[in-house]
Image (tube, rainbow, N blue to C red; front, side, top):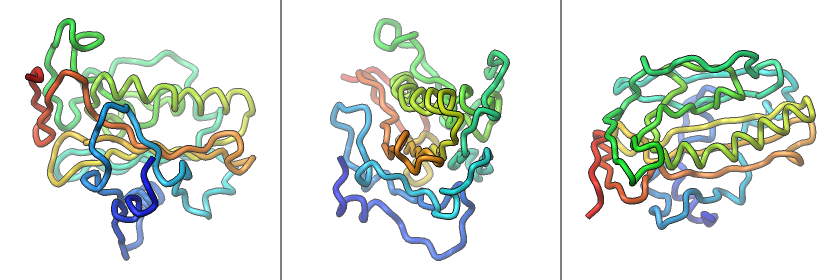
Length: 223
């Protein structure tokens, strides 16, 4: 778990007005603990940073940041409700090439063999957003897999209760790197004020056994 002091060091101040998708997400990945074998860490006592004015929103919405000058995604923010969830099967996304997409096949080392997945920030099962370049980053197979339990927690809660969940996934890039160091995932159930779902975690965009150059997305087998 990230300590309060580490959390303060990781957070950057900002005086300019930000979009709701961006507010509270300015975390410097260089200030977070280095990967040490755990797929994720808990941030700030597992309490997300959603704007107070959004915590009473009992309606669905979704916001996606525009790609930056390097073609990188920003935060994806939504209030997940049943009406956002898809009713059709997911289509193809192979036409999207997110920043840092230098995919390599590592047979026997990576599940599914290929290092990278086109990783939805807001999962298709939550929003129905599929081939949206503002919602897809280059993520390792390991990180993409580790996101699923957090996504399922939100999906199961919304389907069961009919309530809403504020939900934000923010890719964190160090400097001008094309590949995200990881993502923060935040969730907070609205109608019961976080009793049903509440988390704030950071997942590392790593793959055991593989060395990755985050500046470019290139990779090689670890020595």
